[in-house]
Length: 123
Image (cartoon, rainbow, N blue to C red; front, side, top):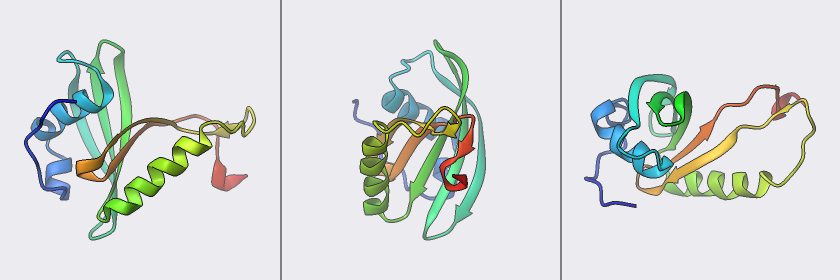
């Protein structure tokens, strides 16, 4: 992981491609070839959490990564730890379990790849 200039974890920073591109490159290991093509906020609850969709283009092709940001760092840490534990469980072929991609502690953000299938809360 490289040293990156700190940014305030407000919505403006999370929606700024210039600020987020090096962070996503570093977290996802995409190298200098990975670029943020678009950023779309999905949920923003000031003082609580945000969900942002990042469309990336790089060596792995074009893909969408979701970033779940929490105002309280311990919530991001708890989500990350829980997600790591859940990855080993087989919820069946019809369950939609997103793949944990990375954790950016200084932004209190967990990154994941969306999945097809039924969401767990629908089971």
